[in-house]
Image (tube, rainbow, N blue to C red; front, side):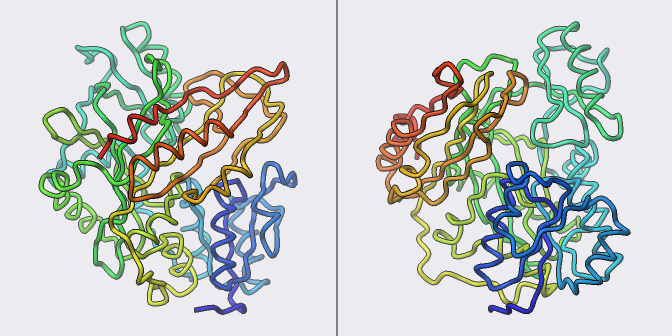
Length: 419
């Protein structure tokens, strides 16, 4: 239901937030974006918003006053636990709806607490080691317990590398806590649940295609394929356990995702979750396939405190499949990004989101610079493979010497035979 008098505040104006701004405007809301960046290259969502505040959203006193003075009706945020932390604080001060509590956030942002709750609910997890001296096999993966998005993540193949990775993860941890886990080479999967007035349903599931020849230096997810190809096996083995975990957290509204691995025997192990919007942006696919755009979940709850206004698509197509291609950059300075307009007009393209700018300096580290992501949906895996071929024909990311900066190219034949 459209209500142009309602004002929605979004914390943060990065490329991820541009889609949130546009969707809220489609629903008829007046949208305000707040962060301290004045450069629209760093905060592009401000260019689309009805109003922009050049303020630091971590200043709770200032944000509370601004929201009160401007009669803000609801606040939302996504894509990082830090933003959710301040969303909770500001909403509490203003007595506005907030889908997440501090207790729920702690479980989803702290990998140790997450795994403890997994064990209580019977959810299988990745093996962990209590200290660097407890490690008895390699390789291992080392992470801050309280960061997401591969920040501070390192992989070690021996004790000396472990010490380096541990120090790097410790430096990136807000709370100075680190977790060491067995490094799993099995296929990564994600599952995203919707909770509406306590009722739990699966929104999406995917399989992750990692970059080729990536060694142990980086964690690079080049492609996400929807749905998870062993979906029925997933439902039999772990779905009810994950639902039990969601219920134990007392979640009433919102979307929560779990990340794990599936081995060759079709057994699962999970290592983290997030109670927030995540960066795959597959909401157009969910609207077409199961009838719900999950951006609406966060927007509607922020305004109304419930999901009674949630729009449902009566023409959903459960046979639909989705391929999301992530384009990362090698080390270098981006001189040009071309082909995006051609890609965005392809019949199967449901999203072309650019996250980098010409002139950006890209580093070669554990986390690569993400140029953008491109999404294609079709019932036919063969058609998706053709879409990926065309994508790489169109997209050109060049450095100042005219060299190709694209880090990895997904094998389209893998996609055509995936399901």
